Image 1: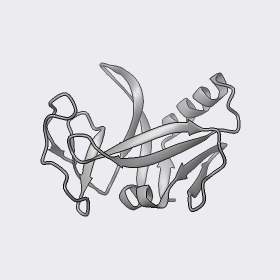
Image 2: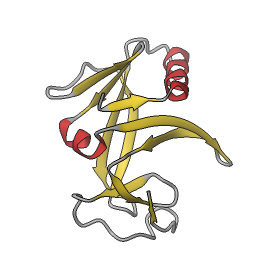
Image 3: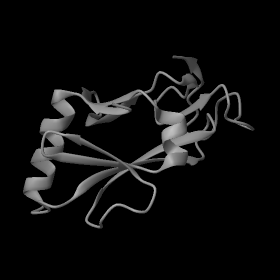
Image 4: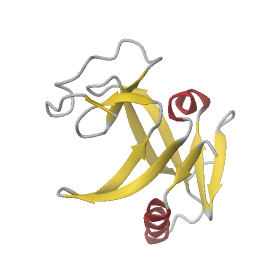
Length: 130
C-alpha cells in the first residue's frame, strides 16, 4: 500500500468522521509547494467522490484519496497521530523526504526542485535531516 495509516491515526480519523457525521467522507492527502523546506502536506476530510486519476486506499472503513502528483512525493508514507507539547495532530512519516523543517510540516525530496535550504517559513525552524 502506497499510503498507510497507523492504528492511532485510523482511530482518531474515525472519531473525527463520526463526530462530524460525515460517514461517507474520505481523507484527502496532498502535497503542495510551500513551507520552509519547499513542499507542504495537506489533509482534509473530503465529502466528494474521488477525482479522476486519484489513487484510492482503504484502511478499515476509512478511504484515503491521493492525486498522482502528490503520490510521487509520498509513496510509502505512513500517517500517524502524535501528541506533543502543543496538543495532538497528524504527522506524515515520509521515507522520500531527505530533509524537513523543524516542525515537520514541510519537506524536500531528492527530486523536488527549488526548495530552500531552510529557515523562515515555519516560524524560523531550521531544516533537519530525516
